[in-house]
Image 1: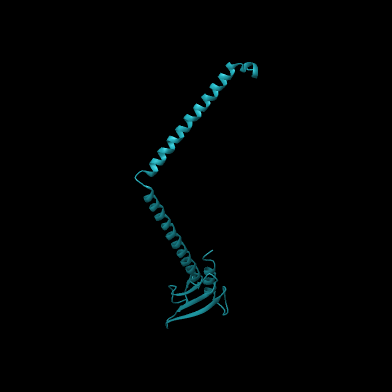
Image 2: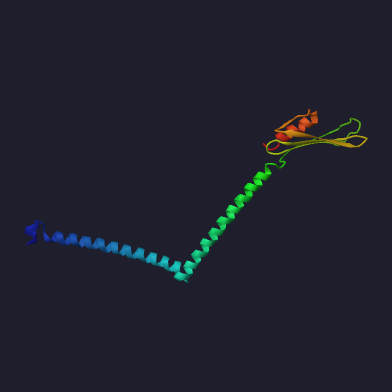
Length: 165
């Protein structure tokens, strides 16, 4: 009767249904294997833990993250303060030793140039002679001096200007 109504042999219908059942059976086995793996992972994750202890662990970790965030913000503020202070610190130096008097020798006189990041600072010139030791200070603003510099002072200034490049 079905053969006449559909025009297809019942043998083909049975074979088709058997193929569908076989495919569904294979899909069910694959799903069961995946569920088994997921159950093993869940069991491993929850081993020795109940829901309450897991919640406590999560809360503890969230509190630690919050503390680390606050500490990081504090460190950033401290670094910013240090950078502001460092801009005024002497970070560039130039030193030139020389003989102020030809007959003394030993290069006991020297010129020291100290500059900050904006090339402001001082040149200290210490001259050693038979009568004593004399020192002179000249102010440097933006890498230049208002007062005329000696050759040794110019050399120390150039060394300082090129020291942090």
